[in-house]
Length: 332
Image 1 (cartoon, rainbow, N blue to C red):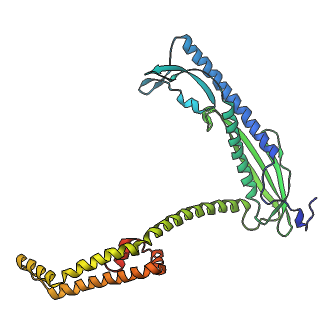
Image 2: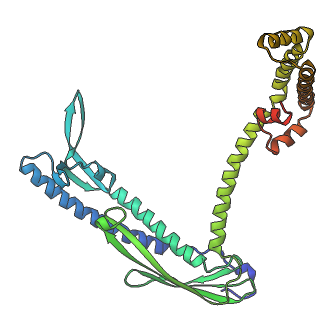
Image 3: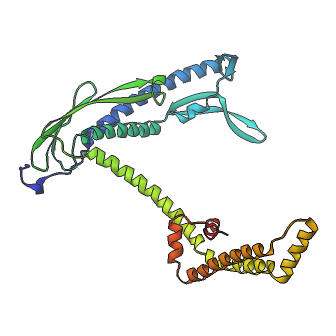
């Protein structure tokens, strides 16, 4: 028996529904789903048998444009195992999806769907109760019971961190939609809830909100991990630039220096004379030396970064993370 003030006897904080209730929900959904599938299978088998007796190989339906042949392939994705007439073409045999012959209920598919619907309903009930439980609360009891007419009702009892008692009263009610009115075209369970907390007031974040926050954080962490992975790959590539750019800069410095050699100046003066425009050699030499100085500055830093890339990593983290951005930083 739980005794107030005895923390060793406290139970798990998060509410989960009892196994027997889960089994009940699954079986009820399964039985009704199988019955719905059997009814459709019986209707189809009679309809297809009548078509065969009439000597027809396909059904038609009216459309806005007239009539069209009914293509039954979509039903193979449902809860029916269908046998189709076979067509042989070009040496191979295939199903004629316009001519189904008979069908039986796919019990395995019905069971899987019943489990999925059960899990959905259970998750909603657990979320509703956990929405009334604070992360500092402790569950001490659970008397939820199966009621009559599609109902689970009762309360979950507990105590706060200060050993103040409370109860979360809840009712889970459900109904079914059949055929085209259901989500799967056969039968779907829909649930509704009533719940409230009585006794000690809930304090702080609820367990359900904590679970939601945990999922959000996990998604954010996963997204950030992808970002970090891409950034790490980009840095690995960027960190090799000092060696690559040193070779390129040596070539640029050599080529640019040739522009202000005696031969280079003479060639540009000759071009100006032929073109009839004024060539300011002093200004040209000054601007070219500024370019050479920028190349040398970047080259010296590249040599330094090859020994210690700490400064280069700092630039990368600030957004200078491409070759062109690095060149722009040095006005190249």
